[in-house]
Image (cartoon, rainbow, N blue to C red; front, top):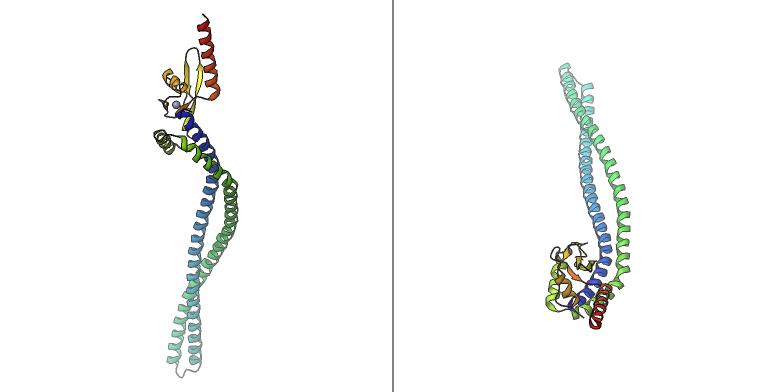
Amino acid sequence: MGVTAKLLKLYLVDQKLNGLKSRLRAAERYLAQQDAELEQLTTKHASLDGQLRQIQASMHNDETEIKTLDDRIATNRERMNNAATSKEHAALLTEINTLKADRAIIEERVLEMVNKSDSLTDEVKRVDDELEERKKVRKIAKSDRDAREKEIGEKVSELEDERNEALKDVPGPALAQYNGLSETAMEDDEVMAPVNEEDRRNKEYTCGSCYTLLPVEQVNVLLNRGVIQVCPSCSVILYIEQDLRESIETAMEKKKAKAAKA
Ligand SMILES: [Zn+2]
């Protein structure tokens, strides 16, 4: 077996592995997205909750203050009713009015806080509902990911054994070249591609990945199972599919036989 054929064996296993793993990767990406959204909602929830608690504490303080003012007003009113002089009566009345004015300011503030607290409560509830929904979606995403992992697990380990077997045959430099291409390749990029026969008579062969016309010398090297050939345009490692090889070899033999007869 030529070095290209050995690499091809490895490549075919790698393609199957990538196909399996890409389905898992998609599920993993989706799960990570759900986790991120959950985290964002949880942070939002905590922040709203904090604001709500702060407002409720302020409201509680103000209500205590109103109660204190009410007590003072009541006490002053009692003293006013029992006032000995009109001057004392007037002074107490002034103080009551001041206390009432203070109370009104605080009451208005409480009213504003009640509104704010109501709208915060609504918002917290909304985020709560959203969190519940998101948790359900996340749960499905998680079980989907786990199912896929389980589903491909056995197949992946089988293929990894197959890959290790294929690796044993590949010479070091060829493997290094293959690994280099695999590392820089994007998810859908090809690392190896078949040679396409466009026109045998005119010796026109193209790269199966980028359709660039290949020098016929490259095709000859591949037919003779020589060193690795790389497409001059897109750099994939080229190979000749078995059917094409057989067809070319048969044609060449026929030609030879004809020439021998003549
Ligand atoms: Zn190419």
